[in-house]
Image: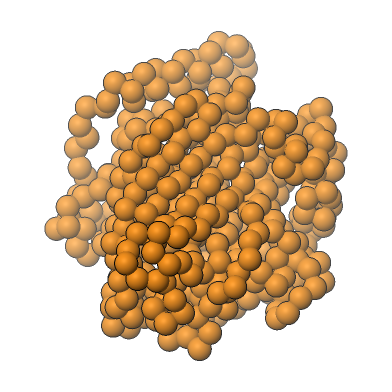
Amino acid sequence: MKIKKLISSASFIALGAMSAQAEEAVAEVKKMAQDTVVASAKVELKAKAATFADDTAFMLKHTDIVLLKNGDAAVAVAPAYQGRVMTSTHDAKAGTSYGWINRPVIEKGVVSAEEEKGTILEKIYIFGGEERFWIGPEGGQFAYFFAPGKDFTVENWSTPAYIDTDVYAVKDKSDKHVTFTHAIDTKNQSGSSFKMGIERKIEILDNKTMASNLSVEFGDSIKGVGYQSTNTLTNTGESAWTPETGMPSIWLLGMYAATEKTNIAIPIKDGKGPKVNDYNFFDGKPVPAGRLKATEKHVFMKGDAGFRGKIGVTAHRSMEIAGSYDAMGKVLTIVTYGAQEAKSGYVNSKWELQEEPFAGDVINAYNDGPTEPGSAEQLGKFYELETSSPAAALKPKEAMTHKQQTYHFHGNEADLEELSKKLLKAKLSEITEAL
């Protein structure tokens, strides 16, 4: 069934009154946008859907948003979507909204089980957002997206509520950070039981911290936003998580707004195994030539939302960083993660009974595209960068933490070039001309 048809067939849910917090935030964002129009006589009097102010004002009509701020930079986080970073910007008044926001699903909201029947909402609520928290693996005998004993088919696949529709509790917050908690009681495809405690902290980073984290200096034209998520998974049950029961992982996925001139760049090093795991989770076909290129030092992939495909890089090849460059908007996006010892390997998300369930990827990249060749229908105009923790071999009361940092930089090409060479080990021209 077509994705567009699935989404449009669900009934619309009337919205209730906004909270006082949401009303105040809406007023603040509207004032930002109004101040910007007054400040420039050249601003056209029409909506600009790609601005942070517009995206945030829209979301606040439908859900609470926690706004984190550092000068002009801002990050919008949604408690109702599992403490998800929805979008961010270097300029809260007039700047680009870097996250991909799926407005129709947000506007519709979570519907009843009866209304979900026959729609994609039975499988997943695609709210969008540039960093969401998931539990891996997706496929295999230790999967959390397939009920015990179920075959690996689209009909049997669904996203668990605890990483899809559950609301995470706000533990504490300020204008610089917000911390969420949640409890999970679930089973994997093999029938093993898991009780998990989740704590997720999002904090916006100041310019000094960003520069220090990346060991760079910013050129005069560079405007940026950065944030870190600290995600802790605790075994709150009475049994250890082992290779025999299956072991979960912390999986962070970011949906970013795609453009025709966006390319993904992942630096790689010499190491065991292939440079890139080139596969498509959906039909088993590789990403076609002209959309993926692996060199001795890089993996390049289009992030134009023009073809549906997914790739992965293992810890043996990863340099703990991935990024993309949007040549249209002159935006360099960087994602880094904290490497740690992985005695139990990384989970494998392939949809099959696996011979090596702990030989998975640490970095993934996904590009959305038409659901069928020649079709205009697709999930959305986005691409993804993802990182995963090692498999969590935890005894009762033990915990694992996975940290990820996301940065977006806007500026002139000369200053962005210096950042790209330092961080991605590639000139901008190498990224743009690779594909």
